[in-house]
Amino acid sequence: MISRCARTLLTILAVVAAMTLTPITSETAEAADHGDESRTVLITGANRGLGLEFARQYSAAGWKVIGTARSPEKATDLEDLGVRVLQLDVADAESVAKMAAALADEPIDLLINNAGMANRDGMSFETLSFDSVEQVLAVNTIGPMRVTRALLPNLRLGTTRQIVHISSGLGSIEENTGGGYYGYRESKAALNMFNRSLAADLEKEGFTCVVMSPGWVRTDMGGPEANLSPEASITGMRKVIAALTPAASGTFQSWDGTIRAW
Ligand SMILES: NC(=O)c1ccc[n+]([C@@H]2O[C@H](COP(=O)([O-])OP(=O)(O)OC[C@H]3O[C@@H](n4cnc5c(N)ncnc54)[C@H](OP(=O)(O)O)[C@@H]3O)[C@@H](O)[C@H]2O)c1
Image 1: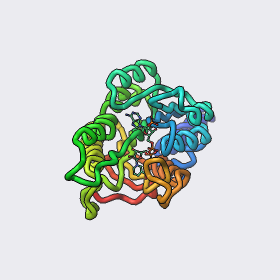
Image 2 (image 1 turned 60 degrees about the vertical axis):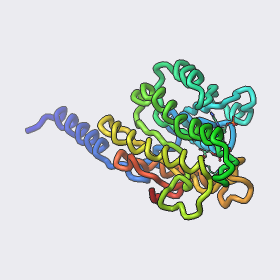
Image 3 (image 1 turned 45 degrees about the vertical axis):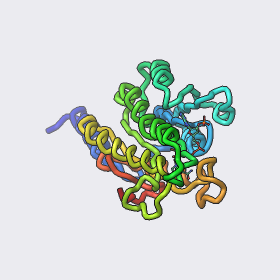
Image 4 (image 1 turned 180 degrees about the vertical axis):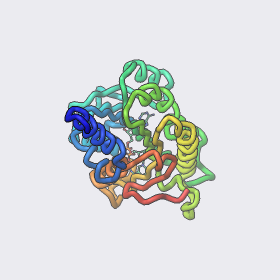
């Protein structure tokens, strides 16, 4: 005969076990995405375009948002959201180190390496400048590597250990039948490869590392003709991120949840 006290204890243990074993479905993950004030996201290049919309939506959902900008004094739209703003030029080692030092032992649950640039002279292989290729590689490929390494201690302190790099469909080798975009395409294909190694190396620590294509979006980079609004792209990507589990680590996903070809 079990005592009432032992029965209560068993009930509590059963509930805790059920909670622990409940798989993370898109529904539970999405529900968790809303109003969880204990979670922190750091978004690079958050002063305009997709980064600003990420900051807006995560802030509205109750997350602690750290948005970075190269020129914080000009990042008024980001400031207006009431989020924490840090200076960061992803291509500047000193700037990256300073940002990491400012965050010291603070946990970060989700890192979004969003900052990026396109080299405008990339459509003609015969006239493009190699300086612009070097610059786009420094920002789009080495930048996320630098930022990720600097923030690994913070991510290890976080609960979800998620790293999302904003890549591009133009980084897909398999889908490249159109040519052009020299420099930009290489920078994103290399970013994809970086993530693949990172995902493998951090698997044992329970990290989830993915590359995502935001679609063609109406920002300064995407231009006014793009078919997606920043709201739609970011809403889609947040949904995908909320449903991520470690099993998805190393994948290349679209804003709408479809898997992209390498
Ligand atoms: N829009 C699209 O259609 C599209 C499609 C595929 C992929 N993407 C990718 O999505 C990401 C965001 O693009 P977006 O459309 O929002 O572009 P955007 O409107 O041009 O914004 C780019 C952001 O990156 C920042 N940035 C550029 N160089 C930086 C550096 N060295 N250090 C730190 N921040 C830097 C910019 O800061 P400043 O204001 O200081 O320049 C700005 O905040 C990029 O990685 C891009 O490649 C966009």
